[in-house]
Image 1 (cartoon, rainbow, N blue to C red):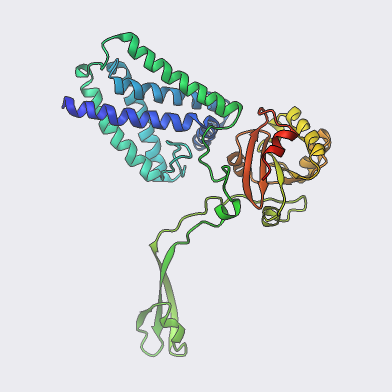
Image 2 (cartoon, one colour):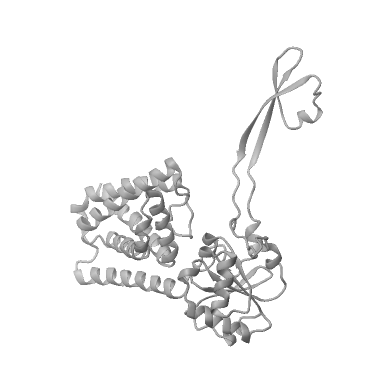
Length: 370
């Protein structure tokens, strides 16, 4: 049993470190997921705590992971582990049953799990955590010196906090999203796979009232003078897959969809993105507006979650000479973790992305042109 507990420590420890790191890379993305859970629970008033919780939970996961690998103070950390796993098992179980949240966010954007997959994963972790907890008094540290164990945990926590700091004040050091540098947005909007469906048509023979089932091919040659339609049954043979980008649409001030037209433009574009215009850094916006005047050969456009009227008022306020368009807030949040953020686009391909803290100037942008 002790050997099984030691193996469980390794499995759970590695999973917790990986889970904490991939979320620490993008703490804002994790905070958005926590806000989803708040909305489901009717606790949206607590959204102001989501970023702090996201950073803290990532660091806590990494601390638990390293403590299990080192088997240091297992009595304490296994108790924390068990509390967390029980809570998240109930949470993912509710999502699996009621379908309230489509993705648990356990591994950020690096690995998407369905609610059912998340629930099964947590059930397995719950069993392993119970084994660790039951054997906690018999799991002795790898290093006898307390200083060595404390040093590893301290470095793990500092690494998590440093990575989160970069992800918040600049951009995530690793981008797992469909809008990452190098991706073609047009291709990502078209990479979905339709589900395969088999249809069976039920018809009743008019002379005998006898029902018979026909395939799609059969009904092409059916004599409708002899048969009367009754019902149709559809069976999914193979599940499909949604496109990597399914909620992105650029609307002009008149409500017209300009997405494909803009993506297919064969010239450099700078997209200035704000997923929450009311909370955007206005000084950064004004700096970008001045930058647009210096880069006359590049097409600038603003993408915000605002209405046409709000966009126009804001454009005048920051004295921007380029047009503003509207887009879905969730899509804008996914595109870039900066408010405002800047994306360099050509032919629908993402060439570069910048946070407004990255010291963007005309020479920097010109250096990135192909």
